[in-house]
Each structure stands twice: as structure tokens, then as C-alpha cells.
Image (cartoon, rainbow, N blue to C red; front, top):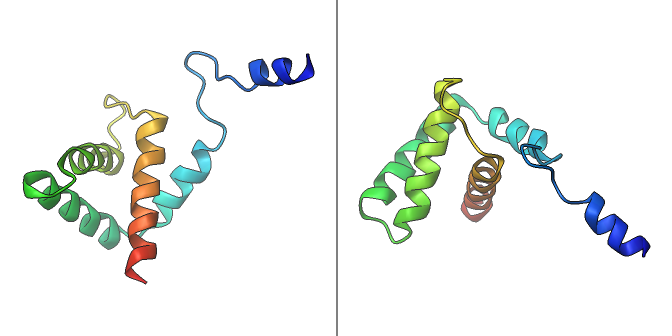
Length: 95
């Protein structure tokens, strides 16, 4: 019974952001402008002719909206998490 209650409590309400979204946003904001522009260029190039074209398209669009700071262009928390994950994974791979 307790486990079911915990599962229900752990479900996000409609419109509720994931509690860890601040960590993902802070990570992305910690990147330099130069790094963000390099990633934007990387996503653009891969969206045009890369192996993971759709991932690159979504990441490009998300990063473009994030850097434009246009409040009329919403960004879903899933897009922010995915972008942070892919950039973090790419940085780790480059080390």
C-alpha cells in the first residue's frame, strides 16, 4: 500500500516541472557563450547531414530558443534535460 502511494506521489501533475530541471538549466547556463555557439554549430551541421539528424534538429532548436531568451518560445523540461544530457555526454567523450 505504501509503495503505491509513493508511486502516485511521484507522478508529475499536468504542467508541473520536474524538480531537477533547475540543475539541468544551471548546467547549461554554466557553459560559456563560445561553447554554446560551438554546440549550436555542431547541431546545425549534424541536422543537415549527420547520422543522428533528428536529435540534432531538436537540440539545435532547443538551444536556439534557450539562448534567444524569447519568452514566447516555450521549452519543455524534456527538451532541456535531453540537451543537457547530450552536451554533457559530448564533453565527456572529448576528454
